[in-house]
Amino acid sequence: MERQKIKNILLNGETGKQVLVKGWVRTKRGSKNVNFIALNDGSTIHNLQIVADVNNFDDEILREINTGASLSVMGKLEESAGSGQKVELIAETIELLGKADPEKFPIQPKKHSLEFLRENAHLRFRTNTFGAVFRVRHAMAFAIHKYFNEKGFYYLHTPIVTASDAEGAGQMFRVSTLDAKNPPLTDKGSVDYSQDFFGRPTNLTVSGQLEGELGATALGEIYTFGPTFRAENSNTTRHLAEFWMIEPEMAFYDLKDNMDLAEEFLKSLIKYALENCMDDLQFLGNRLKEEEKNKPQDQRSMDLIEKLEFVLNNDFVRITYTEAIEILKNSKPYKKKKFQFPVDWGVDLQSEHERYLVEKHFKCPVILTDYPKEIKAFYMKQNADGKTVGAMDVLFPQIGEIIGGSQREESLEKLEARMKEMNIPAEEMWWYLDTRRFGSVIHSGFGLGFERFIQFVTGMGNIRDVIAFPRTPKNAEF
Ligand code: 4AD
Ligand code: MG
Image 1 (spheres, rainbow, N blue to C red):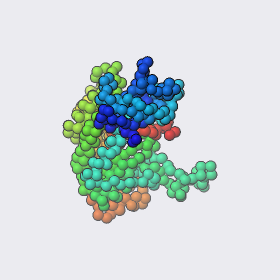
Image 2: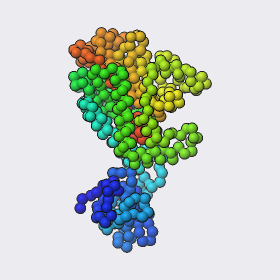
Image 3: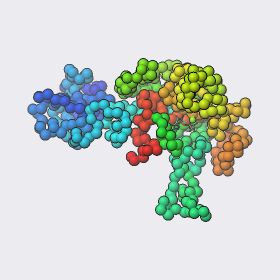
Image 4: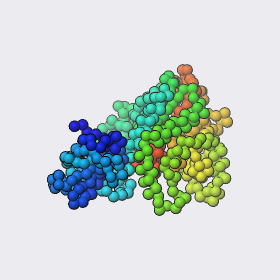
């Protein structure tokens, strides 16, 4: 007999039908004559209720059916009176596939804190919360490929190991093939890291953008979707050392086209989540309410589904960096000295400023454009004012910056001049500059931080809880 997924049984299961299911026990409760087992197989947030008449089964087996154990159950579906579901399974045979010692299995049928589950990250998939998060994450990855495929963008695989620093920010992890015990040394006796990748210095990529531009200036529209690495030692709820980024890059797009694409793209993903992940989103929304029930009313988040619908149905505000600085300088927290970081034309905005604009001032997502050139990367299009560049950051409630992007400088002359000012060696970037030497066109692109976006969709407060195996300064074990 073929195994059926619990999701399909709960959606389409017909009473009287014989089925085989396999999964993990979430809970078991019993009376003298029957045991009720909640079984989950990962296909849905919902459990299938298994009803086992104790007279039909071995005492030994029934005793071993504990939270975490794995079972194979065959039986008949019956209309369910009490379980809140259409059907339940009346067990005819139960095979115990793997025991779970209740004294040792850490995930018990009670509410565990997210901190506790982070310490048990290898088993946290077995909880409702993480099941929901990783199903939503999967759905969003699928929706990203679907969106770009339907628009005629090509998925380009850019390298993980590279000699270039795409952002020029120096936040790179070095990659080495050197023998750690016996490395080559410089004249001065220190390790010669310029030798580390078969004789060249290399690092893990911080962004696939520069290679993406090579693709876009031939294929027209491309996107990348892969892991990126930042060696920034920041222990925040928004930063990871290894995160996934989606980077579309488009020939013939100016900054306005870039903003339009970013807004349409984000909305299409939210729409997909609302249409395809409702059970999980409802669960996650309720979890958030429960978590925040002791907070004062004005500090509680908006209902998760209402929040997603709100972002889907409203235009993003678009203002310049200069206008944002004006708003911030006229704000209450600025006047009452409540901001931790300074606000002045020229400073990089901190997440407290971004969140003020989005959550308190406009109460909706904001796209900020035209930042001072000093705080942005070398490749951005230089504006006529000589001071700003055609950058765009998309700011979201609860998250702050979710997207960073720009129109790219297409003039070889201006780009080379800017690189010189910033001490970026043009000789090493000859391959990049060739796009401006041969058939240069205006083009634009952006990068969406996948985990920050998943935080927004699931309402999870900590970025470590939306990636299966978080890499942070303290975490690299598995
Ligand atoms: O703003 P960033 O650094 O932009 C770039 O890397 C450009 N090359 C993108 C492009 O134009 N193609 O990063 C883009 C996004 C940020 O807005 C943020 O959402 C996310 O990547 N991000 C991080 N997410 C988690 N942990 C980190 N340490 C992150 N750093 C950036
Ligand atoms: Mg940025």
